[in-house]
Amino acid sequence: MLIQKRGCFTNELSKLKEKDFIYIRGPYGDSPKLNGLHPPTTLPAKSGGPILLVGGGTGIAALYLFA
Image (cartoon, rainbow, N blue to C red):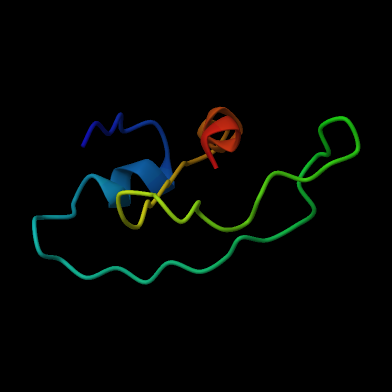
């Protein structure tokens, strides 16, 4: 895991240790549409397992394409 301490969120995120529990909620808001279509909200049946994407500040914009 790579964390750059740049603000309040990333500073707290950097304090996490292996096996720490965190509570994640969301997603929130209305994501931008691509050609009038929203990206799929579920993983394909052949996915390798659950995926967790976490971003802080403007970092969330880069994660959008992977969601």
